[in-house]
Image (cartoon, rainbow, N blue to C red; front, side):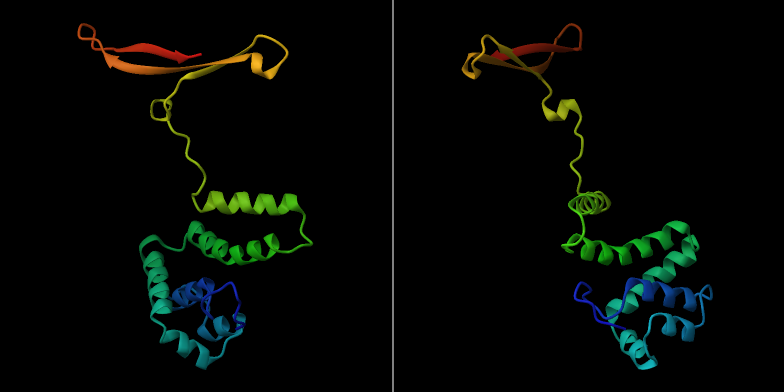
Length: 166
């Protein structure tokens, strides 16, 4: 198996997944797994001494036992492998900027790093009004209006108080 500079280990998550399937009786024979991943028996023995590899195989075995072989589990294992391809495409000068931008956006989304839409109450709410009183930018006036909530003693409903700066 080739050591890839983007992978911190010589084994992939896909190999750990395939070994887990074999150990659970749901996958190919080990000889076929080794051949497909282009690794030798001595290399799999080395990986078997790696506690991180063993932990990953154990994790996949638990998932297979508890949830069965689900489409989502297979897709997740495949997606992790495809991140390497995505990384290579993003850094390839021959790839168009539009493709790179889409890959970057997708990676940020998958990682859960997109900015969250906060409810208006938490975001502060408010209204911003700009009135142009002439053709020059300095003639424009901006009014920021932000609601301030307070409880009225008699109605128990929020009362809106508006404040603004001119």
